[in-house]
Length: 147
Ligand code: DQA
Image (cartoon, rainbow, N blue to C red; front, side, top):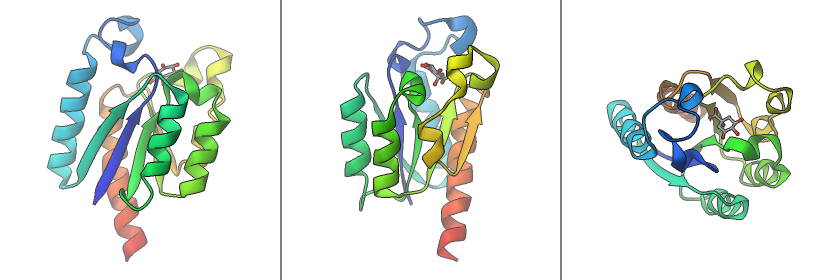
């Protein structure tokens, strides 16, 4: 089972950006956390981060036929990108949305998630742990789909 983990803009600034919201660990530590969680679960996970909407769309399109599912934190594009929503719908692989922070408890503009409309589940407000739960959920979801 191969899962693509996508992270959007400014997540490469983890540890520096608004640590009171996103924590003090950096992006490399997030990648290490995801690799360890995936290995514990016995699934393969590749990480990709970009600050560019089109690069994320390209990566989603290229996932078709290569990955079984997607975990995505589209970051600020969550709230703006119909292109990412359409790409997720186009490939129709099971996708799970993750946010480090609780987007429903912050500014009103963060309460809309376009990408979330193409996702089977969302984990938010759990920090790095949300990625582990998303991988675990996706593994069970994909196993269920195969049964
Ligand atoms: C975020 C929440 C978004 O609203 C924000 O733009 C981000 C990160 C999160 O992980 O909590 O960049 O997706």
